[in-house]
Image 1 (tube, rainbow, N blue to C red):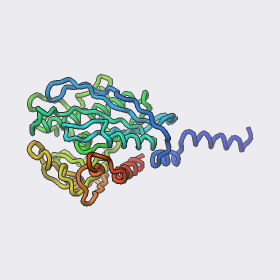
Image 2 (tube, one colour; image 1 turned 135 degrees about the horizontal axis):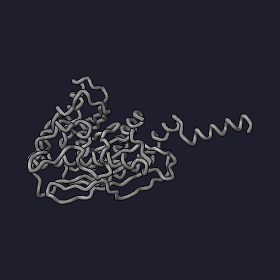
Image 3 (spheres, rainbow, N blue to C red; image 1 turned 60 degrees about the horizontal axis):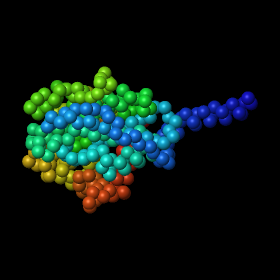
Image 4 (tube, rainbow, N blue to C red; image 1 turned 90 degrees about the horizontal axis):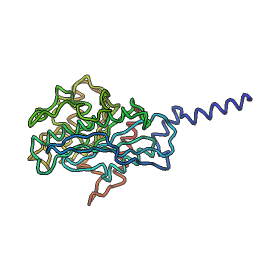
Length: 317
């Protein structure tokens, strides 16, 4: 082989494998024309508050004809106040589809919901805790199945909306000794990593970053200085459902605990000297502001949120 043919062969191998610049382009821009979806992957079985056994499933979106052996995974978690919602929500599908076209693998997951007849202040907290357990179960499941699905276990991220953001934030902030007292009332719900299929045992729920859209926590004390997971928060400043600063939900005020929104979380992290967060306030915007009337997505607002999320993920990669 001539010297020049050798150089071109090496260059071709590098481009096919994807060097640093190729990888940066892959995730920052839309580089795949098609996406494939595996529907209904079982990742957990668990009882809900009413004692009903639920099968929790995920839809896995991935770039079609992808040759990358180990891909970053984004686990998306829908909103709905822990009483409603679905991985089939329009925003969940749109976000997953967009990220997969950029080269990410995306798992849009279920979690246990509080049945309407079981709604109470205690059960809302228990529901939030169960959702956190289910997010943990999904992370550990996909770590266990990383070879099968071609996932880089060091590049697993969470992207949550509203209640999904609350569960995602608790996944990285809450320790077992910080479980809410409601987790013990009416029967101990167990530790954070107790839920999950047998295959998930032995894996951790650590992730490489979280995108929290209009999320919050009910207790700022769960945020400790030794927690280093990067956090990206997107929040409308006029949000009345999960307040940007703090307060009770305007919709679920009777059963909702006081919530501390993105601004309060940022203040808490600042007070602890934690600099690994981003706060992106949208002035005057309300809750889930990329939805318009009749829950139709507003493309330009969804795109604005996705750009922030993708930029954040690309910097971490």
